[in-house]
View 1 (tube, rainbow, N blue to C red):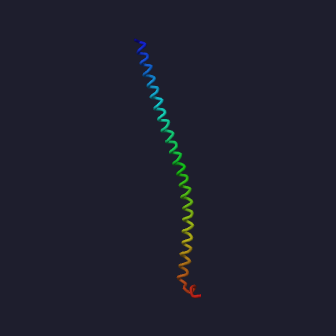
View 2: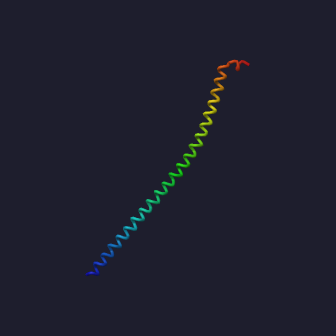
View 3: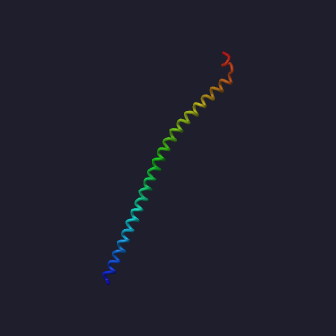
Amino acid sequence: MARAGGITNAVNVGIAVQADWESREFISHISLNIRRLFDFLLHFEVTTKTKLSSLNEKLHTLERRLQLLELQVSAATSNPALFNT
């Protein structure tokens, strides 16, 4: 009878070990996917910041050109003699 109990305990231990490995495998997959998501987000952040910085520089250049054009138009409209030549 002791032998039958030993087999049952061995089966129970085997089931517990199998369940533990399956749990660890699941946790490993989740951890890997979280790492991949984190890496993607870091890359996305860097790329976005670079593109926004470039866009900001272009916008600044356009704003300066617009200010220059506004000054030229203002000067031309305040001195109509420039158009009568």
